[in-house]
Each structure stands twice: as structure tokens, then as C-alpha cells.
Length: 191
Image (cartoon, rainbow, N blue to C red; front, side):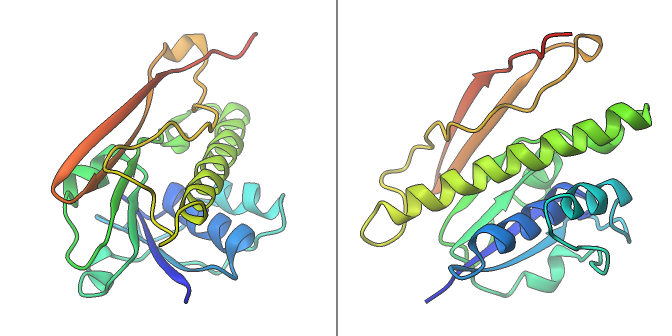
């Protein structure tokens, strides 16, 4: 039976759209995946379309969807990929697990050349997190990670340049009424 996963971000314009497409591209036989936004933007960011096309995933026809469309559905995992969506949707009825991946919004970069690079990095970060999620799920008898605590996924942290300062990449999981968080220091890319 396929796992049902919902990826949530605020606008459902970039990060959750990319996560949905990547999960479908890399794990389509094992998952039924959808994405939505706590406050949908009404469109998909063109740079998300571009960076996914680079790896063979066409989301040009995707639409920004509201989390309300899925509120009454059951999911094996609901994964928020931005802090605002985690605050907007701290619980989810019918979710076996709720995870949070704190991924910065690449669309806030004002310089177009650097923005597309941020979209590529976000795509690659999400791909690593999704791969680790499926690896961990496959390693347990029931297909669910053991215990209550989140683990270091081994994915590369989202990179920021020196002008934007340093920050943190956070993963957390809420299951059985507990919430835990894992923090990793980000590494800066050499100039």
C-alpha cells in the first residue's frame, strides 16, 4: 500500500510544490503525494518550474492549493517545509506523523541570478531530506521511523551567503503528542 504524504508551506508556490514533485519523481511507486499551502499564493513560482524541469520534472501545470482541501483526509505523514506553515498547522487530524523541515524561501532573494541558485539549492536540500525520509521509513518493519525523536537526515543544510548571515536548518517531528527538534549549524559556501 502506498504511503500518503502531504507537504505544506505557506503559499504552496515553491518549497511544497518542489517537495511534491521530487517525491513523485524519485519515489512515485511508493507514495501518493500532494502539496498545499496554509495561505495559498494562487500560483507556482516560475523558478520552481525551471529548476524542476532541469531534472526532468514538469510542474508547469501545477496549481497552488489550499490546505483546507486536504483537512479531512488521512496521511501517513504531513511535512511542513516552512516555519510559518508549521505555526499555521501545528496539528493535523488524521496524520500518523507530523514533521517539520525548516527550509528558507528561495524566492526572497532579490538578485535573479542568485535567486535561481537558491532555488537549485532548495531543490537539492529537499531531495536529500525526502530520500532520507524514505530510507528511514524503509528500514523499520512498519515503515515508520523508530522512536519519538527526529534524527539527523544527513541532508546538506540550506546555504546562505555571507551577506545574508548564518542561520540554522531545523528538522523536527511531532508524534504521540511530543515534539522534538534537531538543529544543525549551516556551512557557508566558499566565495
